[in-house]
Image 1 (tube, helix red, strand yellow):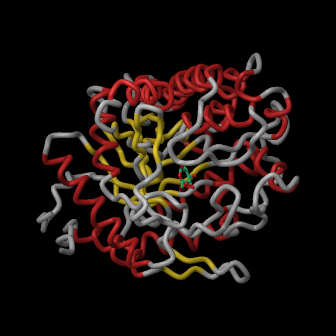
Image 2 (tube, protein in one colour):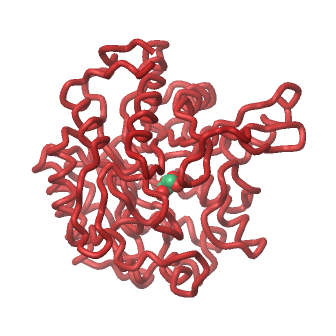
Image 3 (spheres, rainbow, N blue to C red):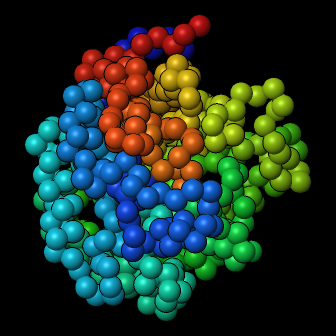
Length: 397
Ligand code: BGC
């Protein structure tokens, strides 16, 4: 680990990511809100970080820290509160965010769908109901006033594989965020979200052919134990590879990784007993991003890669700096080895609502739950500073 200077190419995206439901607060028309209020998860999101009102402060901080890019999502449940009724006020809200980002020197990457759907969409059967893909496409067309100008990157759907796994879990009566490694995905949901992505890609290109369209896949970094290579390949196929394959022909693909999953002949096996674990109980494994980039490139072929999420839930911010140091050296090595990596967006800008609980803190910026006061952590200054200098500090040790 000796990279003193990054090989990050010109135009490299350098930023942080968020998702609407996790930071905005009071996303009351969404499926997750209903589930949270019904007590299906540990705690509800409620006001979250109040970023619906405080997005300017969030962007001021990110730009001031040295970041040049901000990935945020816009909320379908707000934009289309009832089927076919599009809120001009919400569209204007998100348009102000796009313009606000640009004014601050942040290039916006806009995610159109990050896990949540309107309650009416869930009520009519969700992704596998007749007409679901067309309804998503109609919503995407309606976002034209938000994305038609000033937006270079659009992510259609965040972690479609996670959506499919969450649907699989729901069929077995469980609700919530799936464990690392991922249980069985629901095949019909897989087909639907892939079709939705392709329809959305075409719709965005009609809005503005210059927009670079992609989607972001959750990479579990499956690692075969000796003798379990075939089991691993089969396990990975429906959980990861089909979604990467569906990105062939896209302008870029988002790579999202946090930890690894080791697979034995009987399936996933727990992390070694002495392994360090993060607040999500995932194995501390900064090398994940390097594996995820290489595996994605192998499957997707000639499509540029963007790390659209990578990070760690840690109470001790020094572990976050250590994690990002290890991860960034992996990214640098991948670029040196010829991979076409176009950006790195950390997860997450803020300590936010982690799908059922506020406990796992992924943020570069702490948020006071009472006052919503934001306080950048040392890791935020450190990571943002790399954006300015484009130099990667030597890894410790
Ligand atoms: C998701 C985020 C989530 C993060 C950490 C990703 O699966 O896109 O919404 O907060 O990982 O769990």
